[in-house]
Image (cartoon, rainbow, N blue to C red; front, side, top):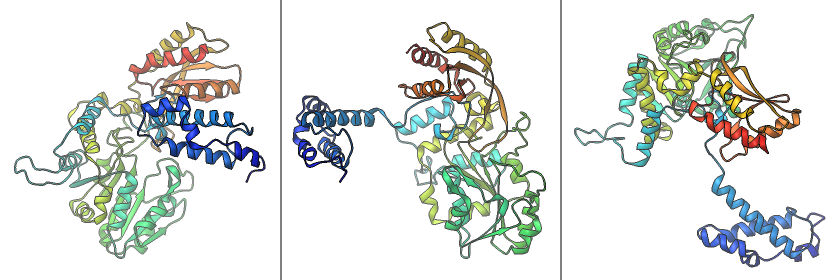
Length: 467
């Protein structure tokens, strides 16, 4: 028992019924009769006994504290959690902010799927049951040149399904230089070892050759090559090419798979963004399959996409785990529209916001000037508001090192502490505005602010600076 919780203090803690009878709580209970108020109050009073809250042994004050905390907690539950935000960080595929925003067509398709029944697993002509996402899978085949395709709930699940579909004995052969750690402290070796009987590391951290795979490969092994999406190995380094890996697989009757991760279906190299090969070019190298994310460079929703040879995909479809990682009707609806835009639009960036942001198709400079001038025209106190050139980044472990020319609204603060406080105040607004802090300066990068949100940014900055 904490030293401050004396017998007098414990005796002063009001009973649950007394707190529930408080007028403010009684009114709140009347408008929210299904909420477990007694359980909440009991939890708060137990916290008092353990050392939470005030130290004064005053029954009325402790009751007021419990009422205030209960109302505050319920307000957080009602209004907190996931909510729309304004992304002024300049990070396009911001994992913490939900990665890729989708276009209007994909959003409307998802909304229609949510609000009604859809032909998810039924053949319209015969009325018989069909396979989920058949049209989406066919669209992916036409887009990538694959013979077969399937969609699961994320790319980690795609890799897991691949690794677990070739057992027993289930052997994965991978370069030591590609045993990566992905976001959230998930490490690829741990995923692979959970899915396969044996993970065989070949080569060294900086140099791996086709001959390293060849020495250990045997029939039905999976030769897995992993895209180094968020790091580079330069200098005295070598890695086996996709073509070489495909050759080893053919010679030893095993399977070459490339985990692209981010999933490029657009010619980013032509846009001056690195030398990323798209999925069609990867499959043309001769590998059996490619895995990739749906909500990164593709610009869609969270999903794991597997495209490859008919025989390889068929093997995955027979895996009992396929049902555990399948996608729902909303994912299918939205992703269908995103893939269609690549196939049928002359420029897929037109209805793909993240793709437009990444390739610099978003006009940021004029908008940054206009927003800065509107904010500076109001009361800004000791803060100076201007605009300047700035760089956006792709984020999400994609196209690392690539910078997207942009512009930002700059708020010069009296000091670093004031900049940190201003950034927090902007995040705590009803519609949070996320910014980037550099020393005593707060930046709102306009590449990741949609043009329809410019006025919201002006209001957020004006109201917050006026305080």
